[in-house]
Amino acid sequence: MILAGKTYYDTPIGTIELVCSERGLTHLAFTEDPTIEINPAHDHLLACIEQLDSYFAGERTHFTLFLDMIGTEFQQKVWHQLMNIPLGSTVTYGHVATSIQSPESARAVGDACRRNKLWLLVPCHRVIGADGQLTGYAGGVSRKRWLLDHEWSMLYGKQTALF
Image (cartoon, rainbow, N blue to C red; front, side, top):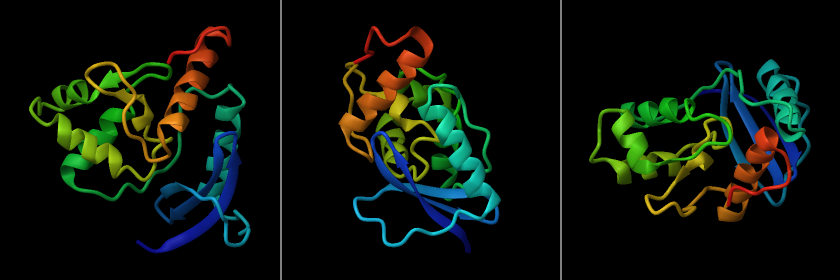
C-alpha cells in the first residue's frame, strides 16, 4: 500500500487522523497530538470529510466511500458483515460469527473488530457482548457509547440514550 493522502479531522469525540491510498481510505485513528495539518487534497479524504460532517450533524445514516481494507480473508468477511448492521442497531459478536457461517468464531470476530482500522466507516461500534454490555472499542468504550447514542438520536430523537 502506498500512502496517497493524510489529514486530521476534529469530531465531537476527538481528533482523528484520516489516511488513504489511491484505492481508498486505509485507516482512521484517534490522535491526541496531530503532528502537522496536512491539506486533504485527495478525493478520498475530501469525500470522507464531507460524509463525516454529515454523519456528525445527524444527517447521514451510511457511508458511501472507497475503502482499502487490508486484512485476512476472515477479517474481510467480518468487516463486510459489519457494514450490513443498520445505523442505531446492535448485534453480538456471536451473531456476526453466525452470519458469516462461522458460529464458533465469536472471539475471532472480536479480534477482527479490534483490528478494524476503519472503525467508524466499518461500524464495529455496533457490536456488543453476548450479555448486552458494551465491550472493548479502539477509541474506548465511552466513544462507543457516544456513537451508539448519536445514532439512536438520529433515528429516534434526542430524548433517549441507547446505553
